[in-house]
Picture (cartoon, rainbow, N blue to C red):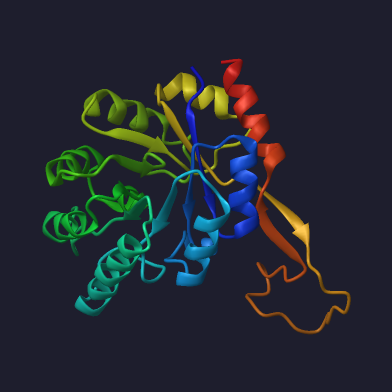
Length: 249
């Protein structure tokens, strides 16, 4: 069977492309260059109005690590409350303690606050000090449907052994959702190595900026990463190609 595809997005056009290509749901973020942060209220509202597939909203107040101050934790709680008021399908979050364990107490508070929305524990999991203890801790919280992970490596392919073991240990208790570096070229191999039933991809492409005038002397971001005149989007073609490749697995 073809796995379910969740597409990581940060724009309305990417949400629409994901739905047209046949994705099962989207994970809506802002600031993907830092791994994703909480999108704006307006972005959540507009994406929800444009697509029928479920929208999972990232709850992450900043980039960087996953050990949060009380102010940051308050922001996460308030963002979850707002998502629930707006009828969002689900939320995505993760919190670690200073010594690299899953913060079970704070995560359980967020899960309770999120009900009846669906919950995914995101790649904070990949920064935990022991993936197998982290798995049991996340399961013990209750109310979390899946864990998004690269297997604690830079890419899913590199972390495939860990992911396969997580799938084996989790059984029917938790969905393991691999994400990170999945492409048309490696998706078949990843599925064979891990036995996962769901896949998380960005399938990124680009579209040109609307700007005709382009200032070559100034950049709005870091010099090595800024591309003002090429806008990253989820590619319908790449999503469809990955899906087609899974049918041949």
